[in-house]
Image 1 (spheres, helix red, strand yellow):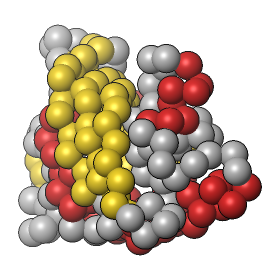
Image 2 (cartoon, rainbow, N blue to C red):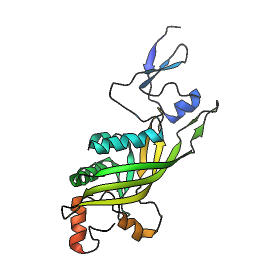
Image 3 (cartoon, one colour):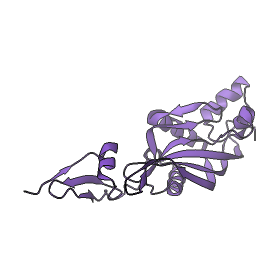
Image 4 (cartoon, one colour):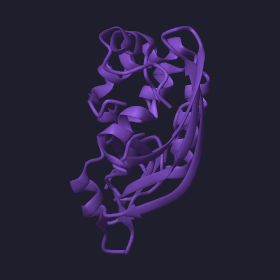
Amino acid sequence: MKKFSRVLSVSMATVLAAGTLVGVTGTYIASAESGASATVPAAAGSMKARSPEELLALLGERIKAKDVDGIIALQEPEAAIVNYDLSVIRGHKDIKAFYIDWFKADPVLTVNPGQVVIAGGARLWNGLVILRTASIMGTYTLEQTGADGKRESFTGNFCDTVQEQLDGSWLYVQDNPYPPHGGAAAASSAGRRISPSKAASLANSGSVSPHHH
């Protein structure tokens, strides 16, 4: 039989039928003669997180660099961020707008991961578990410029949810710096990631003081 190759889009059905994932990045190619799989190396610079811990570290690096597009690349399309008032910011468009506004406060964020729990997923015939979910829990400190132009410092807890992808990389599903650990009042007072425009709006309305740590 004449050998030929064709590029395949990897789907859950393809992976389960094959029984394994070969390689971790790039375009998956199948040979019609042998049925074997291979990968084309990913382009240089397309860094992906190979673990939940690495994903958290990459997010921290890109926040430090104020690299909005780099941050978006670490999020699933339907990812969400829980804001300080417990509202939920959903999807790439709104998450991008949120970070652009938040970076006006010149934030300095330090994250201290405490525990990572990986669970769930789909077990293949050979025992390999794919498409797992993980929770990343820990504490953080944040310094940023408040609505009055003064620097403010805050501390808090976080519990983020990340998802393993078909290529073995990990992406954010939910960034939650306000897990339930004292009720809505405690969450509202933690103060992480309040954009200058939002802080000013709340301060003017009298609903929340910009100095609330």
